[in-house]
Length: 197
Image (cartoon, rainbow, N blue to C red; front, side):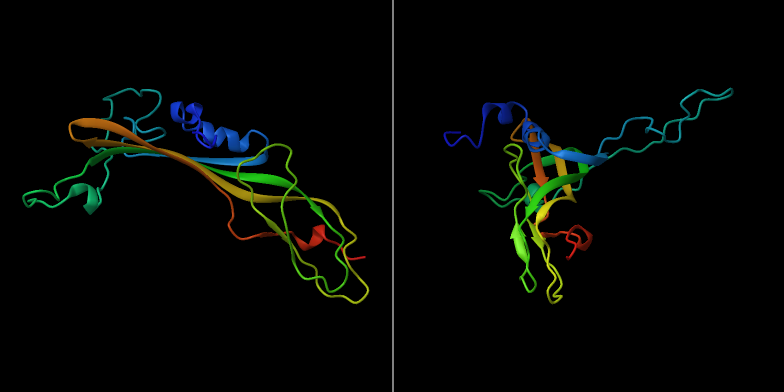
């Protein structure tokens, strides 16, 4: 907390990290995927009609969600004296994933013929915590290069927020994970954005 990388707002609401990431981004498309090990009954858009029909009402499906605990959480079936018993029981998990198309502004310098690929950082309007890098590369054509300029490049960013409910030592505890993911390798700037003249 002394460094400012962790704030009380992040502790109070971990999704603050996600909102800080997108606060000054240009996002043109978002696909949301929601999942849970405890589906609602009836499932949204599932086997039960939204408007009751005449006749006997169909029954809700008799199934529920669940999680498969890893060996570390389960421990040994018969723990030896002094340890290796169950660590926790993960009994529910809920998660939301956002697949976002983000447009970045990039200033590309002049690229004379024979210039090797150049790694560039996007122009920042504000303090976006995590950004990908981009690579500008042109084919070798004698006496032809890119004159330089400003380009806009779209790439994918994934954000997620998940909560696992854990039972351990007589407590039920929410374990929350949030993250923003951007491409690790430099994103190629499309050729049509770097016309040779």
